[in-house]
Image (cartoon, rainbow over all chains, first blue to last red; front, side, top):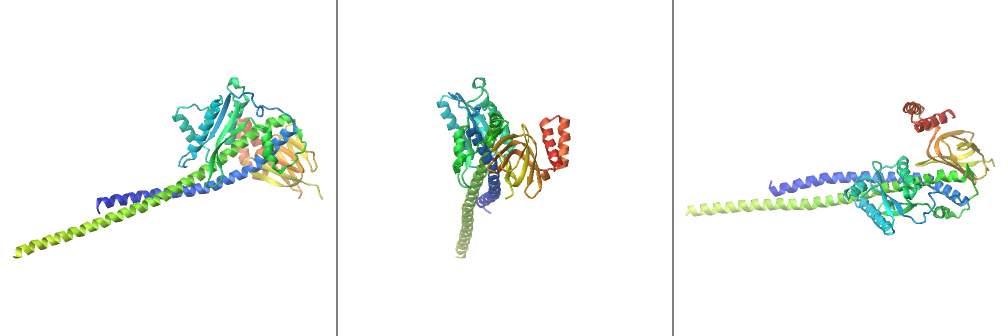
Length: 305
Length: 124
């Protein structure tokens, strides 16, 4: 076998192996998307009921709470960025990071200091490489976040909001995550989580125009709100984490699908090149034989004379 | 019509139980509370503890609830909990082991969790 042909054969073998891997990853990601979507759906009843309860307290009493009071002039804000632990997901992480950076810039332009909190090794690596300050980070659970994970993330954030700004607390909390729109579309979005505007929550939940009854609060409206708001924030963060996980798997699936397609194309091109090389080799061999034979024939013809 | 109320017991990551009931007893921060059909609208903070639901078929469903809220309006009662388990889902031996371990580690919150589980099983 000619050297050229051997090189092509070897490349075809290696691309085939890669294709098998990407194909497997695509299928794994596809099954995980479904699982992640199911988790999002399973967490919805809790979120809906919680929103209803928050609305009930918000409309039923004029209670003030640090998580709902707007600072007169916000000077410090926290940004929570949700990324994934692992890559191979196309532009998933870079989109989320880009969105976070734009948000940070906007906040800075408004004269606010920004504390960055990061979930996921990818986002953390990006910030560490650029030697940017990260207030706190978490990783290791982005593929399948549980409610307990959301709680660990929410804890320090709620603490920071409740602290006075002068003592290193923050006035507002923004969250950047990747919204799962459909299998094909996932968009990085940012939104302000805190301070919570109870009117907005009410608008969100009372789409059915229902009139909420006058609740009896046990033990008191303040205590209920006190217990309710952190849970509400946790549930929002949990929902964002689940959506982000579903989006990551969908992005991986798409990236791996195009990798598999590309590998297939590459194998086609390489086989054509290998065929051409083989053909060229045969042609060369034939012309060599023919050339040799005619040279021999010429030689004998000469000696015969 | 026999008086009944609709109960939804939901945990943060799943819906645990739902159905019709005649009486629900839960522990709020200010003491045990029993809710029957036609109760006045209520929103309360739950303590960790067992919740007892008497269904319309006369059966009793007990669940271990670790913190959360109870809300009642329009004959619909929702129990929201971060973690909630039905008593027949609880593995007694595991809960006992967890209780022993928590006691030896002096882990108060784990001890309370295990204790609530065991009490829910005992109340069954």
